[in-house]
Length: 451
Image (cartoon, rainbow, N blue to C red; front, side, top):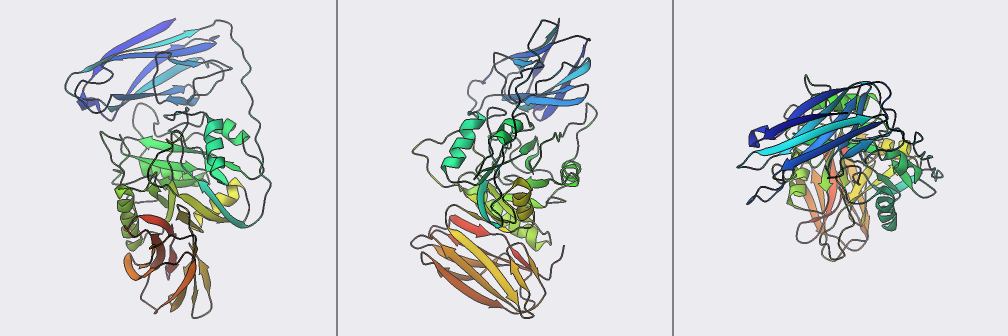
C-alpha cells in the first residue's frame, strides 16, 4: 500500500515546512519513505538543493531524515534508518514534514514523495544498548566536546568511530548532538566506561538558527504540528524546564545559502532566555571572533551567559587539516553527565585549544570566586594562571569587553591585577597567538551582578 505526493519547489520555498499526512491501518509492520527530485544540483550554482524530512507518528516525533538517499527511509519494530527510531508501526495519522532548506535558482525542483506501508512479516526485537558507566573520580577539571555529529544526521561516521576519535584526543566527555534527533543516544550512552562520560544531546536546527540541548535523552521538537512552529524562546524554556542546558550554537556562522540556518536570526532571542552561547565553533575562524564580540556585547547588556565551544565535527578530519579547535574544560563536583553539566551551568569552565588557563579573584571583604562566580561590588584582586602557552602568545585581561591589560605570556606563569570598586561588572582572560587568533578564553567572573 502506498500514497504518492508530487510537487515542485522554487527559491520562494526556502525555509518552508510542507506536511504530508497518511492514515496507517492496524496491523502494519513496515513504514517506508522514498524521495526523488530533480535537479539535485542546479547547474551553475555552488551548492546542491538541501531538503530533509521529519517523521511524526500518532504518538509524536519518530525521527528526522537529514540526508535523503536512493535507498529511502525504512522503519520497522526492530530496525530504522539512522535518525529515526525503530518500534511498532502505530495505526493512525503519520505526518511527513518536507523541510525545504535550500532551493537554488533559476529552475524549479520537481519531486515525487512516496509513502509505503505493509504487513509483511519482520523481526520484532530491536537491539538493546545497555548504558555504560564511568567510575566517578570526584571533583576535578574535565576536558570534553559538546558538539558533534554522526550518520544519525549529516555526519559521515558511525557512533563508535566518533567516540573512538574523541577518546584518541584525550577527552573525558563528549556530547552527541545530531540534528533534531535522539536516535543515536542509546548507543552513544552504551560506550561510556571508566575514563569516559557519554553525554546526551541534540542540535535543535531551525531555519533561523541552531541551538544545543545538552543532557537530553528525550525529544524536543520545534514543529508542534501543521499549524505553527514553536518560537525559539518557547523551545528553550521547554529544555530548561526539563533541567537540561540550552546553548545558542555558532551565532555568527555563515548562513544561507552556504550553511542553511547556521547564522543566528532569532531576533526575539538576542539572547533572550538562553543561558549560554557557543563562541568557538569548529576551527578558529573570523566568525568565531565575531561570536566572541557578540558574547561580550550581551554581557555588557546585563545578560549572565556561559561561554562554550564545540568542534561541530562531522567526520574524521584529513591528516593535513589546518587550524585548531577547542575543548571545554569544566570543573565538576563529580565525573558524570550531571556533574559536568552542573559545572558548565555554573560557568566553572574555560575554553582551550591546548593551554591551561585559570582565573580566580578575591574581594576586599575576603569573598573568593572562580570562573562563573560573582563577587560583591568591591575592589577585587584578580589572578590568572596558565601553562603550555606558546612563544609570543599574548595574555589579555578583558574588563567589560575592553582590553584592560595585555602582556606577552611565558610558557607558564601567573599574573595579578587589582580592579578598584565600581570599575568592572565582569572580567575574563584571553590567551591569544601573536596573530590575534585565540588559544584559550575563560568564562567571566561577575562583580555585583546577581542575575
